[in-house]
Amino acid sequence: MTVKELSELSGFSPVCLPEPEREIEGCYCGDLLSWVMGRASSGQAWITIMSNINIIAVATLCDTSVIILSEDVALDDGVLGTAEARGVNVLSTALPTYEAAKELSALI
Amino acid sequence: MRAGWSETERNMSESLKFHFDVNGSSFTSAGQASVQVKKSLRELGIPAEAIRRVSIAMYEGEINMVIHAHGGEADVIVYEDRIKIVLNDHGPGIPNIELAMKEGYSTAPDNIRSLGFGAGMGLPNMKRYTDEMTIETEIGKGTCITMWVNF
Ligand SMILES: Nc1ncnc2c1ncn2[C@@H]1O[C@H](COP(=O)(O)OP(=O)(O)O)[C@@H](O)[C@H]1O
Ligand SMILES: [Mg+2]
Image (cartoon, rainbow over all chains, first blue to last red; front, side, top):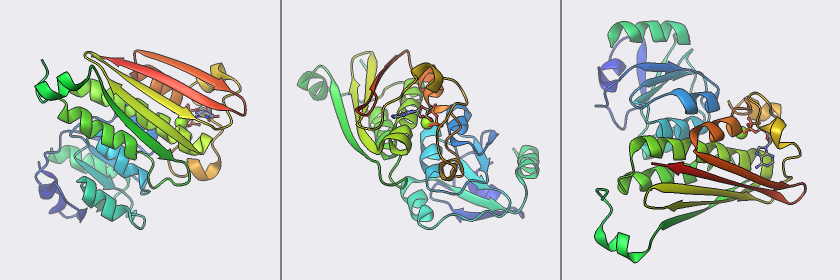
């Protein structure tokens, strides 16, 4: 499933989609950036409640396919522009991380 | 010979160097050097796993320089089959390296933790993802961390 396809499903909404055709290959959940850095891998969706600017660097370095902000977390000011500039996809969902991962798991 | 590394570039010098100033005053730019290095290494055709290890180690080091040392400098040197990363700062130094290397040990303040840092995983991650790591540090003078990634 591509990031764009996921963004069109109810429950997930697009925040920014500079690379809509990226394929979602698995998923990683976590909020401690150092932990995520060492463990998330290329192509995975990353579900987190973190919304500060540093998530963009982590997503870029891990080459995740999309950041999914759970629990209706909104992006901090200025982060959106950086995400777009770096080609980092971001979606949001009202679901808690576990529920979002469960949902995603059924789809991919 | 690696794809993407042109004859001219190879002949110009034995190694390729990248230099970055890491701004210690803001989190907004933290990670910029690592992201740039990742991009450059990709263009050079360095194997993906080596790039991943270099960028993770460098990102952790960059963040540490911002959180703990008011910024510093990062140098990356690409050799034929390995990459050297040197992180240099003029911060407070590390009083007890053995303790600092322990997973979970952190002196980061709460406002840093709320950003998702300060898990005390940085130095252990740097060690884990590189083939060689040395820390030179002097209290009140600064810290210099040298890491090697072979590929
Ligand atoms: N460049 C540095 N200058 C001074 N102290 C440092 C530096 N890097 C790391 N430290 C010390 O080592 C500790 C452990 O570092 P690290 O494993 O990266 O964890 P964290 O950054 O999450 O605290 C830090 O909390 C800090 O006390
Ligand atoms: Mg750290």
